[in-house]
Image (cartoon, rainbow, N blue to C red):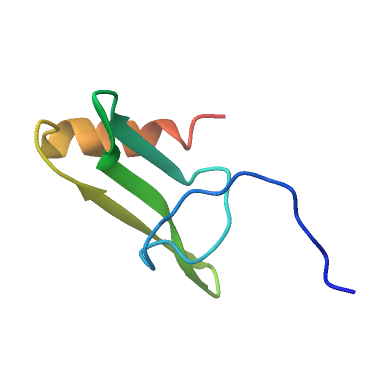
Length: 74
């Protein structure tokens, strides 16, 4: 019998491949289908973990990176 996980999921379009509480989207509230920032865990190779960060205007590179860094706050 297949296990049915009753949870909400976000579409990451193959950019994020591993589940993590650090995975996130920021969307435009006027157009919820437009993703402004996509951040998440891409792969783990030994002790090295790779993350994927995609963003678009109106976010700048600095704003996107700072937002991604906040997910590592303990």
